[in-house]
Image (cartoon, rainbow, N blue to C red; front, top):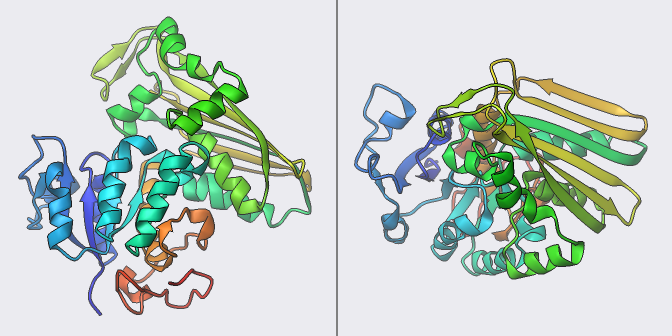
Length: 376
């Protein structure tokens, strides 16, 4: 059985792990692409940090479409920015060439409730060309499937509350800027918070126009409602600046954030449903001070109450492992922009990934022993 073939789009901090994890799971990397001219022409071993040359040179992102037209590729791993619209041209190239894709883009986790027109357009294109596009990563397991599994052990739910924090230093400059890191409180209000100071009608109009910038939990709440069979009646979000108590240096921003300026933000999303269940989720992304660390804290209130707290999760590594483990499910999923709420839970792949696939074919593949996966 041949190996699964993969291309890496975006050779930044995340790709260090996605490429190594893929190789160690028996995946063959056949291409890598980036917009950074300083990386183009270098072997991917320089990103991964291994001694041996892997004979895969990073190419200019402008060559991505031509490469996919000329080479047989099973899946593309996209590790770039956080907004669906920004990544859409990449997904479109994959879909037009019939190449499956998994993105760490947070909005891609469930763009149906934040960028519905593009989501529908991508779904149609991917269906026409027999491939699957989806978003995965840390939220797939720790904000999504972990919560839905706990819900399965609950008799009655009234409220789901979630809070998760992460260091934006670990994810690159694009994410840090989206969170308002380095801005003054006045700049944060004008550039970030103002986007949430609107009515539900105004927000829906912006969503319909494709101009909405959702917080990560906006899409997570949508995913959870879809997974749990809930019907949303209203949803709101607000962005709250996180203020530096002392000067904090950011290597990603290449600056020292002055005391009183923003290290990032907390975004809180509240979702009401027809079923009477309320979901209140909060993500805190900022440049950490020396005594701060990642934490994932979720509570299901009802009968019974259940709380799960995970301190110091290795968020970057967990994100990348989630994506690579998802390759099998994506090869099995029905064609289209198919979000992971429609797939089986992400599970640990103890064997090389190709051993979970009976027949590797872009048009038709099957999971080994997972009959609940979707098939063409």
